[in-house]
Image (cartoon, rainbow, N blue to C red; front, side, top):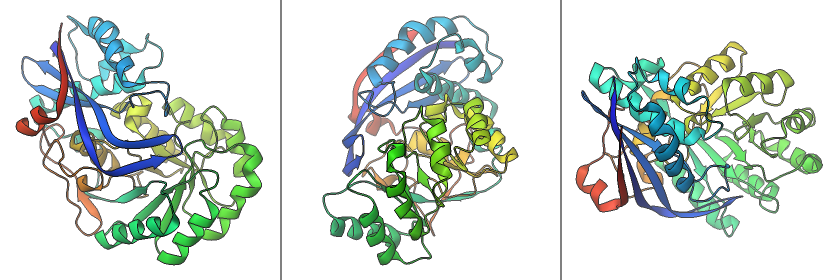
Length: 368
């Protein structure tokens, strides 16, 4: 397999409602798509960068630049035995995992479409459908949040995740737990908003029977997470700190995490995500699939990943209408709190041309 070129495309997708976390508020998603073109097939990748480096050091303009000036020349003229070679060829470039992941995803999609194999089969999926959790952002007041949670439960979501930050945590979680009862799975996500000095305050969350508290401290503070884990009964789950199978193994060994959130874009792609799954499963650590407000392209791949055996907790693989009234692909519709794993070749979905054209704000062909 030899690449003929990459098409870079940015699309602007309005969100159904603003999505606020401890690091900012999104009202629309500016998504960078990558289309890999070979002689036999085309494949799609989705880059999960944000416009500014507030979630990670990467950002969308930077991803465009590194794909255009570094990644494409490195892959030009190379005979690829498979998408697994993308990571090997790009290893010399430090970081830029989200950009690398988007290219690898596109090449893998093209490879699997040509071979007639699905993402689910390639990654090792064992389930035909996966349970859906929903991530609920920070809001202006608790009654507004409770109304939103009620709606999501009425829609069938089996797990609620609340974004928290200092000043929007204990009272909020108490109110939600009282509203939904003890039987609904509930977890919180801090997106690095706290420090170890907040341990006593965070310990107040223990009474609510949470599945986990996600990434309370800065991503570099792995030892701090280990210290915090010894002070809480609520399990610590790492997100931003997990960047590879190697960092996963180290975090588990240090006792910094007892649950792992796997976001393929954050770790460099779906093949590395599978390795993280394997390391965690071998250590007896459950994993779940995190979300980055993906379109139907990234959502399809995430659903396939979440069907692997080690994904024993509901992930952020919500239905399309959680974030978008109009998705790039045929919408993913939840049934009985679950989404069906695509089984068609490659991602199993593709952009709808007229919708893609309508939402496109920029495109560039990068030949090889």
